[in-house]
Structure formats: C-alpha cells, structure tokens
Image (cartoon, rainbow, N blue to C red; front, side, top):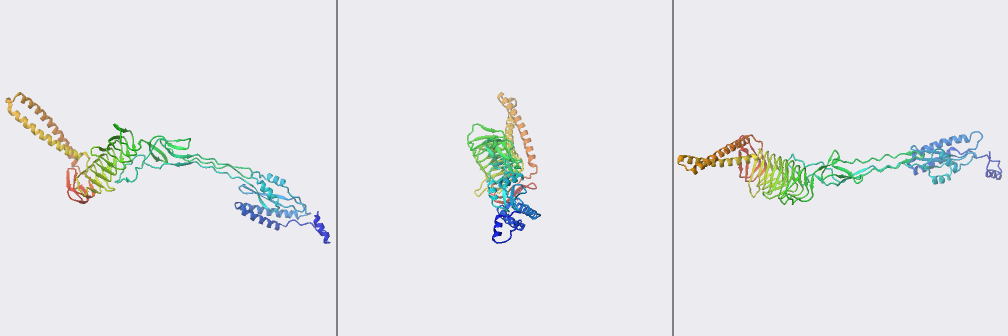
Length: 530
C-alpha cells in the first residue's frame, strides 16, 4: 500500500521504522459528523426534519458497509462517493459526500452532478449552493434541489350589492300591528341596476417535483351566481343586472325581480287617471288631487294628501301617513289599507285597516279596524267594520263624536237608515197623493176636464209610489233579516270618551260618560259594554 511522502519523512526524522498506512475512517467519527451537520440542517429546514433524520440513518448504514469493505482483506482503495435522498413528497433532494478510503480517488463536481442526474434529480437544482457545499468537505448533508409546489388559483367570487329581501309584494298583515318605523320591506330597482359583481375564477400554476414530475394545481371553481327571474348577466360576465323595473326579492337563493311600475320621488301632477297594470311603487309623496288606479299593490313611501288612490286587486300602504282634505282624499283597496296616521280621509277596504291614529275620517272595511299601536286613538270618525274595531281609546279630553257599527257588512247599517228614511218619505208622499185622489174622485161628474186630467196623473203617480214602497219594504225586510242574525262583532278599547254612538245589528247605544276596559258586544238581545 502506498504511503504519503509526509509519512515517510516523519518516520525517517524520528528514526522510526516506516509507518503503516492510515486505517479507514472509524464510523463513530462518521456518525458524529453526520449528527452534527444533521442538527444544523434541521434547524435550517424544520419542515424537512423527518427527511433529514431518515437520510442520516441511511448514511450511517452506508458508512458501516463502507467501513467493513475498507477494512476487509487487502485494504483496496475506495473512491469517494455521493449519496442522495428524496423527501417523501419528492419536493426536496439532499446529498452527502462520503470520503475515499485506502487512498481512493476524490469525486469531481462534474461526476457529482452526473450522479445526481442519473439518480433522476433534474428539476429545481440549486446550482450555486451545490457548488459551494461541494467544496466544504465530507459528511456534510446539504440541499441540492427544491421542487415547486403548485400555486392554487382563485375561485370565482360574487359580491352582492343589494339586500336579500324575501318580499316581492306588500304583505297583508294578519295581526293587529304594523311597524311603520321600518320601511315596507320592499326593494325597488330600476332596469340596468347592478345587483352583484362577478369575479371569474383565476387559474393556478402547476408545480413540479425534483424528479421533473408535473404537479397539477387544483382547478379553481366558479362562484354560484344567484340569477333568477328578470335578471341577466352583463358587463362582459362581470355583473348581474336588472332586466326590468320592479321589486327585487330573493327566492330559492336567487335574486328575482317582480316587474312593476316604479315612480321615483313625488307624484303631485298628472292629467287624468294614472292606471297601472300590476303593482305600483311611489318613492315620495302623493298630493295635488292626482288619481291613481292599480290592479295590484300600491306602496306610497311618503305621505298622502289630496288624491284618489284605488287598488283593484291588492293592498295600499302609505308609509308616512295620510293627511287629507275632507271629500278630496279617498282610498279604496280590495284588500287592506295600512297607514300610521289617517286624517280627514275616506277609506274603503275589503278586508281590514291598520293604523295608529284615525281622526275626522270615514272608514268602511269588510273585516277589522286595528288601531293598537302608537297612540291607538280614534277621534271624530265614522267607522263601519264587518267584524270588529280594536283600539286603545276612543275620543279625547276635548270631547268629540264618533259613530261605530260592527258585526255586519259595512253597507248594511247605512242601507238600513237610508231605506227607512226613504220609505218614510215615500209613505208621506203616498198619503198626500191618496188625499188628493180621494178629494177629486168625490167631485164625480162635477169635475172639470183639467181636474179629470190631474186625477189621472195623480193615480199614475200613486201607483208608481206604491210599487216603490213595496220594493223598499222588501229591501228593508232583507236588511232586517241580516241585522237579526247573531253577530260576534265587538268593540274593544281601554278607554272611551263621550260621545260614541255604537250600532251592532239593530241595537244602538250612545256612550255619554267615560268608560274604561270596554268590550262592547251584544249578549241576550241587549248591548253590553264590558
């Protein structure tokens, strides 16, 4: 075995015999150096700790094998060797140089790079780091390649600009209260208005491991676009917009539009009658004597003054109150009328009326009049309800006079009075006609030609009035029959100030003193106040 010049020189100077060649590197020293460089590496790359530990274990096994081989037999030279290790996900590649033994040859950088390529490490090679680490010696574990992880794309996104309201139409209230402090829970929208902004998905970038294997990025998902009735995707796919004017609402998690007429601001001037097929939304006040008719719901988001408003198929809601003029403010709805304040107005509602204050007004409705919220007060008003009247109080300290009738269709009590009045007039006229006819007939042949002609006319008039009396009598009989039916209608209020005239069927009562906790109804053919 060859001995270095330095060894021979030392042996001669010391007068010693020629030295034996160095023994192969003990593996305990190898292990110590591997553990030391491994600790440094795990601090530098904590995410690869398990990979480094596994590599150290593999290197120790290799060192044991090399040591046995180096000390076996005739101590043949062993060339320096490069060892490589891949992380489990193949995103990292590590290397370590093992020294030559028994005078073996060193490893060149070119050979090292060739070995790495033959091991299949071909992507993400850290060329400068490899060159630097290669020159630092043996038993050093170092990173030689790092893969590129796939870069995820961005999913599509929808940004909603308007509220998710569920009401497409004005809701009929089944209870006794409406919170007029809140809006009508309807969201008007104009054609072309942007409802949502849409961001398209952005594709990601594929990755690659150190072996050159492509790592596909997960596909980006497009966002769910809540497109419903009467909406469209526009602006190059970047927005959900309204296709028509109407009320925006949510249905089955999608934005939809209930098409209807929308008037921004006030409506105070209009020639003739504004007729709308469907619903009508007015953003401001209604005044100036305008006439409005719609086949659906009507929402007035402001106040109402002098106007005639008719809904032939829905409900009327006046958000900020009715401040009318007697004979010039009229509302008629086939369903319900809602308004916090009703002053000097005439209302005809098919089902019910909900308010907080009613004064100097005429109200007719087929169901119940609710005045339970706010002041809950009714003053100086005529109210005819097919069912009941529920309020907090009637009248005030200053006095006044109101008339209530309940329990029957609104026209019945009024018709009863009108028929009786008209029948009395017809009877009075008939008595005069009978007297005149009788007087002229007594003259017999002594009657002049003009008196005979007058007699004929009076008889003809008398017969017409007799027919009219019979018709009115039949009508009165029908109304009386309706009034005789037992009524469950009642008037409930916490306090009644005089004067209040109450009619339930054919029973009437005038309240002339302050009464509290009233439950006015008919019981055993008499009117009961509590």
